Structure formats: structure tokens, C-alpha cells
Amino acid sequence: MIIRIMGEGQFDIADVDQNLLQKYDNQVEDAVNAADEEAARKALHALHDYVVGHGKPVSDDFLGTSEAVVPFVDATLQEITELLTGEGFIPDPA
Image 1 (cartoon, one colour):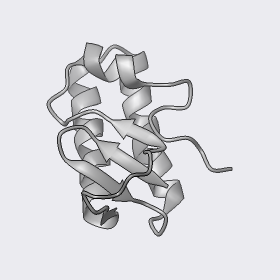
Image 2 (cartoon, rainbow, N blue to C red; image 1 turned 135 degrees about the vertical axis):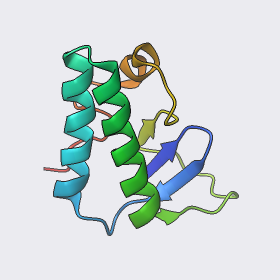
Image 3 (tube, rainbow, N blue to C red; image 1 turned 90 degrees about the vertical axis):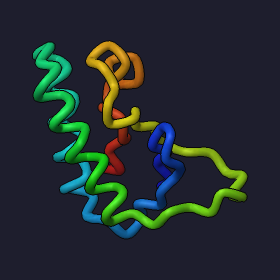
């Protein structure tokens, strides 16, 4: 699966712990649902750090699409909300 982090590029997350990835994604969604901007930003930072730290950067000349888009880490609660789907940012592979 390819994830795009806005302003940073794309990352291949096929080889990361999908359960941990979903945990971080769920934390963002839970914070947004609670309208807790501080918690949403902390959770978004954790998700971002996990994807960047464990995913593999995709070449700039890759022409495929991203299966998920994650906002930049300084996004507001409104900007985060606009990108969330019913499954968070990252679709559950199960």
C-alpha cells in the first residue's frame, strides 16, 4: 500500500506492522471525533513518524496512485477532518 503524506511524498507501507499502523490511524480518528485538536495533532504526529520511520520512500518518478492520503503534521482539526474517511486515513486491510 502506498500512502501520501501531504508535502512530503509517498511511502510504501507494505512491510510495516499493519496492526500498529491502524492503532495510530484510529487514535487520530478518535481525537477528531472528540473534537480534541491537541490530541489529534499528537496522534497525527505519531502516525506520521511511524509511516516515515518504517515505510519505504517511493521514488519521485512513481506514476501510481496513493491508496491513502495523510495531512501534513501541522494540519488543523478542520483540515484533518476533511481528509478522514469512515475508516480513518488508512483503509483496514482485513
